[in-house]
Image (tube, rainbow, N blue to C red; front, top):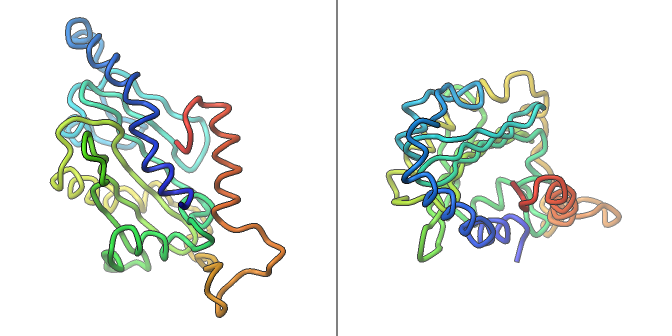
Length: 220
């Protein structure tokens, strides 16, 4: 199974206990601890609270592109951008476009006036499924997804898709890789990388292991 799918399937298992504890604790004592927007310096308060409820904490990495988590009474919302979607989102040696076409079951939504495509879908977990939306443009990418959030459904997916479309141009402003080739598909002889190069999945797994060491949670 590829790195991105492993991350998706593992998100709920990794954090559900901590999220449950956070929500239980906040049900009685967090009314005065809400954090006002804009969140991550970008997102409007009503856009986020419509998905998460009251937001109690925001963790943002001090680097660009954006990497940020918003913790609310109903779960967590992650916003994450990358200059190299082949490494971050590709799996099984495919680039992010081919990977998400497979996962989402289609070629994505074209965005007029850009070379971007947007993929959005609901995870297949039977309990607390996660909602995902990805903006891919050249080799750059931006994603927003929920983690162990309550009452997530197709309307959540639609809301994240619109947020990604609204904010990706701002989040990725100045990122040169938006105009670069999205990267090879390892199993496609016409576009494959030289055999000596690591696959996107292998590279992504290495970067996620390093990140896990510093953040305490894999792939986020």
